[in-house]
Length: 151
Image (cartoon, rainbow, N blue to C red; front, side, top):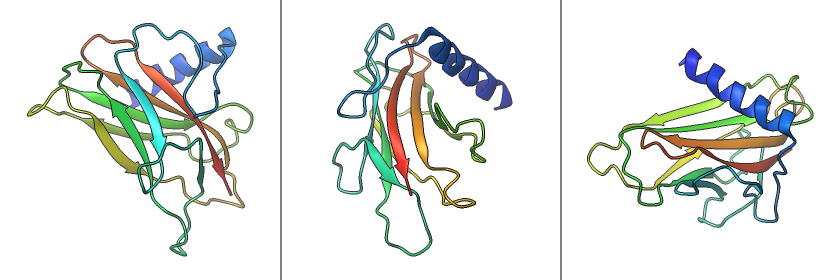
């Protein structure tokens, strides 16, 4: 898992250095990331597409956030989903990444929608811009989606 995290960090660093334009109005990235067979998106607890979520707290006031991996019909034996702080404040964010891995062997071309949460931590240190990353083992180019975590 550490090796995957290092590879992912390298991809994000390369994007930042190259100055890839990222945010558009629906939270999906702008830019050419290769084959668009797969994609990702951030959803609220009713399935609506969003570009911002709230920091999770224990008061029960926040709805669940979801990340969606869209397979584009690509059959894959493993799907990787990761979320990490991006841009200003990423270096000081105490939560470095959230990682999920799936092996959809029974239905390898399935879409995946999975919940996640970014916890409140140290006076909103986890707030700011975040990057969602989806990849598969079918040989498709990985894809990205940007979203904001608000206090």
